[in-house]
Image (cartoon, rainbow, N blue to C red; front, side):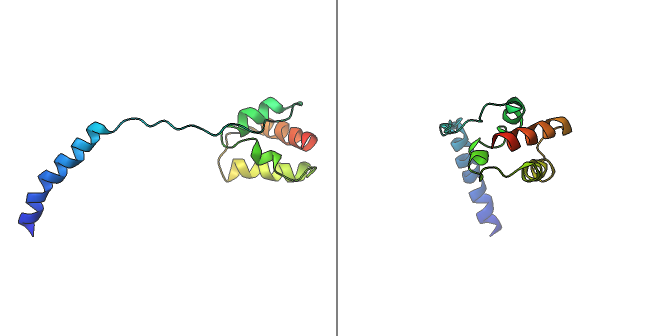
Length: 102
C-alpha cells in the first residue's frame, strides 16, 4: 500500500499544479437592483448601513406601517446577531427613517 501511495503522489501533484495553471479569476454578473430606498430624512444612513449586507428588497417586502418597535428590533438584530457595524446614532436615525417611510 505504501508503494502505491508513493507511486501515485507525484502524479497527483503534477495534476494538481497543472490545473492551477489554468485557474483564473471568475467574474459574476450581479442581479439588477429592482428596488431603491424611498427618499426621506435618514435615507443616507440606511443606504450606507443596510445595503452593505442586503438589498432594499429586504425592507420593501415587509408589511407596511410596522412601527418603531418593529424596526428597532430588526435593526438591533442586525447589529447583535449579524454584527452589522451600525453606531447607536445611526441605529436611531435608521429606525426613525424606516418607521416614517415604510
